[in-house]
Image (cartoon, rainbow over all chains, first blue to last red; front, side, top):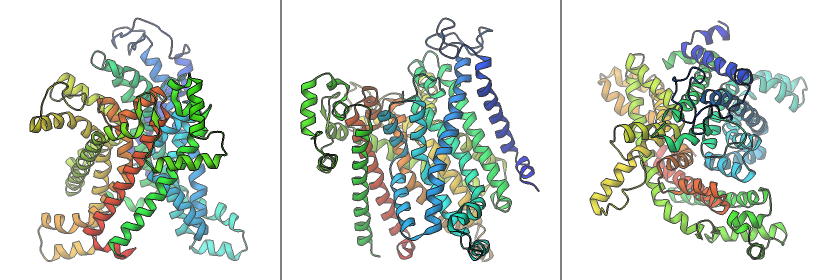
Length: 278
Length: 325
């Protein structure tokens, strides 16, 4: 069976993929659906959802369109999730690969460094970084990348360590290939599937982290995000609970979709594991 | 390796880690945009040039960087975490005041999430493939994807605002004048919602791990032997599978303690729980960097202490661990 067929037989993964594609479509079309942006006051504040045809999800504490906020918020969540994951991979993959491939002092040093970052409570570090660098889209993405790379480094190190003893790597050595060449074009391509699985789960975690930072008021002040919407509506939870409810559902669905996709990919890459699991 | 040398080794490592965090803090202060003296003073002090000059002298900000670093680290080592100009007291005192509430919250949350997670994981593994297994697994998947602070808000909405079962705000009833058992009962009621919502995510993690681990161990040969000699299902599950399946779960739980402390910032913010997480949130609004960095350092120290404690517990519970390394 091909990878795609194995993935497609997993019902959860397909549902996840459909949800994610919807979120991506909404994010891409946001400027078309709501060209006015999410910040404009359009009606009286606290308009209850489903009471006004033009504003299906009502308005928030300042009379802004909630639907427009949700649609534009999808952009930030996906963007930060994706970019911070790529950045974390750019730190974690080379570090883990070097540690696993060369061993010895390189490994010792790299792993101590990784261990240090794993000891620090990662959400607290993200808060400190964003607070000190001032909240902007860039600093938030950077902070999330800085706290998310250690598991990548450990995973890649373990993969490379087991791969480097295999025959095809020995053959490459005998053929006179340089270490760099062997690592980049022989070893790493074979470690790609667990990295992809981990990356899809990391995007989910990054979205949760971004929304948590925004909830605490550490979001980029110029950009509407789901976490900010919940944070802003927190104080009116008694009178207008739906304002914090809806963005939460948006986060929940997006993160759930990514987790389902990650699990589906994992099962598709490792078909032999599936039997033991269910 | 004996227990004592292990503990000593861990303590040395812990000291080095804390030192490294202090150094990191120092560079973070210097990475902040603007004058480090103004950063240390916080917004409130920034207006007073005399005060800034005093700070500059006190921290030797005109000295070379390595001299400054040394004096900063020396301060941290003597538990001088600086002064919070926002709150009008030393950061150390502020944190000491708030720490017990955070310890109570995170420890109860840890115990709840670990015990419920293991219980549900065992239940799901025992009914693998059946409807109740799918229900438990799906719930875990949902908790796993739910933002912590949102779960907390929704819990306040349902159990406090709508149903009125539990208080959704604070550490105890203000001005109640309770003492002794009545006070403990009052605090316990306030504790339930924050501890549960903080633990939800971790409960899901532990449950999935326990389920997977139980299923893996149940395929092993010694379990077949136990079955072959005619032991009953529950006995095998409890005495043979569970004991072996728990090890990776507890290892993971020890590692995850750090995330629990990070999550406390969110939970304490939602529930107005007077711990160091809430203190960090208040300091964020005021850009009170001294306090933020102090809380950061202390939370890292908490993680380290916790990791050492779990390590010691394992070695006592499972002597194989000490022998292996």
